[in-house]
Length: 136
Image (cartoon, rainbow, N blue to C red):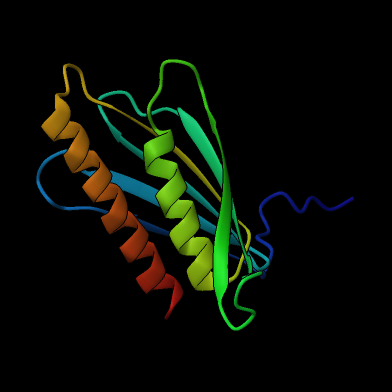
């Protein structure tokens, strides 16, 4: 029997983006699975998975001509990546009208409040880069 392990499904597309701000940069791998999107974000000295967010867009109950996004987040104890994954999932779900899952784990030893702010800004840049690539 022939093995299909090395054959990629034609409905799956992958790409990679990264920030280049010079401090607390993030990287992301994006997988389009059918019409759903899986995004893994990482950075720092010890990349990992610290939080996961699932986002979905839906027609607004208040105004049926508009969409909004609903997200759920799971954050592992001791991690703060929930602040990173949720806005990315919301933005991508809303812009694509797709189901979106975002994982993130970024760690820098002795990061301060300004560093955390920069990581979150880079998260917004990642969302913009992903949106830009998806719109092509």
